Image (cartoon, rainbow, N blue to C red; front, top):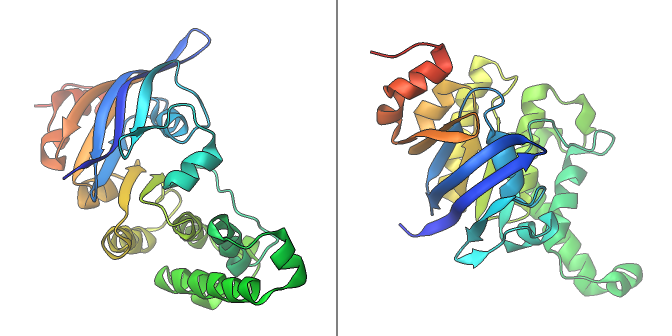
Length: 256
């Protein structure tokens, strides 16, 4: 498998606080890759560095063999990386459908003149945007909610809506920041199947942060574990799950 995302010697400091230290890892194309670690270990900071919210203090980020270190977030989305957030970024007073249409418009070709004059090309593209948005909502079992205000959705469905919005930008890599947070066991099981379907049906590489170990061990093909900003283990789930350093970081003791 070819490498889609490559992180080389990435470190970041907030003042004198080391958030991540000497990150080196590759995410192969087509995998579901997990990044785990205790609270405050630097996971979301790593996502923010990859997606341009922060610029690394040290190190470089490559996507499809092109350096994207320090690029603006909108440029990184254009290049094919989308993400969700720990704290939901939904437009609550807009409909579920319009939330997705806003994201999908990131890829439209019509300009200001064609939209003001409602030229046939604009009308056709708007219809295509709506049809694609509805298709994505149906896949995530949200089609029946399309005309509801997003703020009326339960928490688990809002999480799924964020994934739909990320998919609407047509990414090659999707970063999911704790997608199972706040979900009940049934929603978690459904989410696991949906993430696998997203990877398989959309040919998208998935890179996720997650505390729910059933999700991590159930769907990730490779896992990286960090603690206090440093890598302590990396490998397939079976290897990581019995690593003494991982057990100590999570349980506060040495594993057998």
